[in-house]
Image (cartoon, rainbow, N blue to C red; front, side, top):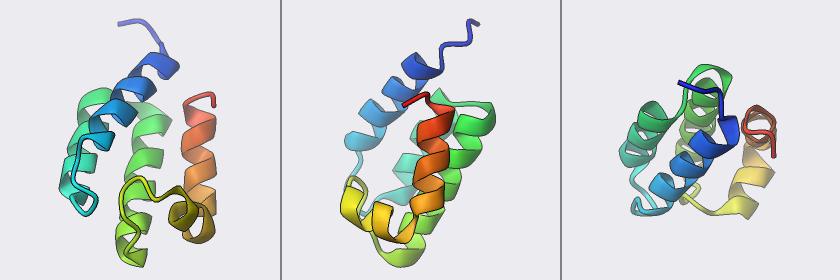
Length: 80
């Protein structure tokens, strides 16, 4: 398995965008199926944070405002 963080992150984002806006379990399944290592832990932390603040999946302004460190760590893990 090659270390292609961008590719697996793309697969994760594509998958999570297909989830309902409040289906955090779906987003967690997407991260578990597509990510590993720091990208996986960052994605799970971000999903958990978004859920705790009631951010809809894909609501970038809500996630940036309330979950900045988690958003940044996922972006860094994915090389964005």
